Structures are given as C-alpha cells and as structure tokens.
Image (cartoon, rainbow, N blue to C red; front, side, top):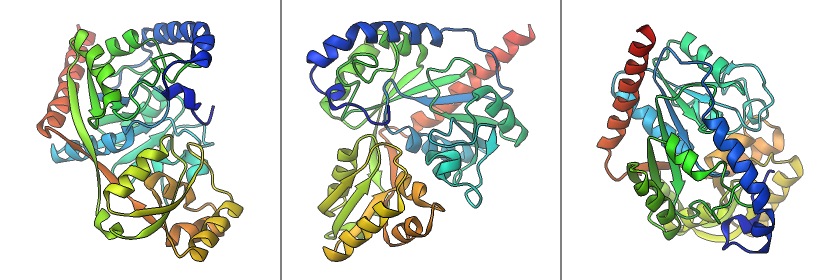
Length: 343
C-alpha cells in the first residue's frame, strides 16, 4: 500500500471497525514476530530508530541528529536502511555519485551525506557489511519490527500531529503491530511536536514506565523562503506537515501538488510542475526526500531539481544531553550482551 487511507488518521468509523478483526490478527502475528529469537548480534552497538505506525514520523532526521552526536563522541557511525523503493537486493554501500532513488530509495541518498550508509533488505547481511566498513556504531533507519538483528537500543519516534492514528492495526489503521508488544520492545519514545495526537502514546508509555523524550522540527536556513510565493510539491506520507513547515518559515504557499509517499516523478509530471511554476510566477519548493528522488533520474527530473528550493529540516531535542545518554546506553547494553555471550 503506497498511501495511507485517510480513515486511518480519523476517529474510528465503519471502515475501521469492519476491518478491525483482520487488524487484530495482523497485530498479534506482528507482535509475536517482534519477540522471535534474533539471528545475529552485531560486533558493534546497534541503535534502532523506528516508529509504531506506517508512514513518516521523523525517523530520518532523528537518525542524522544521532549520527552527528556519535561523531562528536569520536566514533564512526554507519546507517543501515532497508532501502525502501529501491531495486538493489544485495547489501550495498550507497554512493550518491553512482546510485539514484530507483536503486537504493530516497532516504539512503540523504543519509549517505552524513555517514557510511548500507542498504539491505536483509538486516543481518547489511550489518555485517557495515562492520567491514570500519564502522563502530550502527544506526538503523527503521527495522524496529524486524527481529532478525539484535538491537541494543530502540528509540520509537512519534509524530504528535498524527500519533498512532485511530489506534487500529493494519489494515484497519496505521499501527504496525500490537501496541503493547511494540512499547515493550522500545527502550524510549521520542515525541516530535506538542500536538494532541501524541498524548495517547505518552500516556501508554507512562503506564509501561518508558522514558518519553521531546523534540521539535526546525527548518535549516529557511529564512530564504520568507515572503516567497511558492509551488509546494511533495511525495511524502504527511504533506500537511510540509505545508505547515513552509508557512512557519514565512513562505506563502500559493499552490501545491501532493503525490503519494515515495512517489517516483515522471518526466511529464516534472514538465507540468515547471510549467505551472513559470506560468504562475511561483518558486517550486520541495522536501529533501523528494529532491533526492529526482537526482539522476532523467533530464526533466534534473531540471526541476535544479530550480527547486529545498526545505531542509533538523531535529531539535528539548534536552540535547539526552542524545548522548541514549548512545551511551546503547554502548552499555552492547557491552553487557557481549559479556553474557562470552560467559
């Protein structure tokens, strides 16, 4: 399913309740799989950035923020990604000068600017390849529900705009597995923003004594968009969040085009966007993920990318010191399991 049905993020109605028996079965099976035996324990600490639901929650900027702190602690981070939307099936080190989003997906093309990045549908094989790259700290971008690779620390990211939607499991809602099983597997929860939809998760996390961290999304050098009339286009899970971020940056969103999550832009779509921007005298602006998806995909895609402004974002933690504490906890947990293994 490339796009979440709108009813997933609305008050439960007929569709959600009608599909809830299937969701209950799906949730229980997915929850049991999360508790399955791990097939591999990495030689280095593994920190997983995941989320409870399908769609974007802020995992990638969170992973980047953690990687920056890992570097500041004099370690060599590496990213492990499934490479969603890419065609490469073998574990591969991402090279932005060689690969495009059709090869490796959009998120790895962003991550590789910050640290060695490996894409691999097989998380274990990907972790082993990262170990060969002289990486001493692995950051998983997603893979929270995948039990094959042992995680030394799992941070579940929640977007306070959407929370866990209607609270039902797929296909009745956006939840990936039984929430109790997911919360049990998480070491901590990171809530991005302060909107009401995040409160449900905060309350559930509190019941299970899980630490809850807070952060906000901030635009990087977004002052260049102040007062600019823009054509906003994106293929992400929550385009409204993108529009809000543009307005917060002072941009005037005069027109917008929304495509489904991870949308591969065709040459015709790029021509249409360029023509609309020219005819209506608007500046095209998009997200970092969309810009990555355009790179190296053809003449029209490169043309659109070259004239588009990109709204880059970063995660600002309410307490930045907690990031270092998370990393130290992952290292401590990795040391403890290595000692147990030796015994």
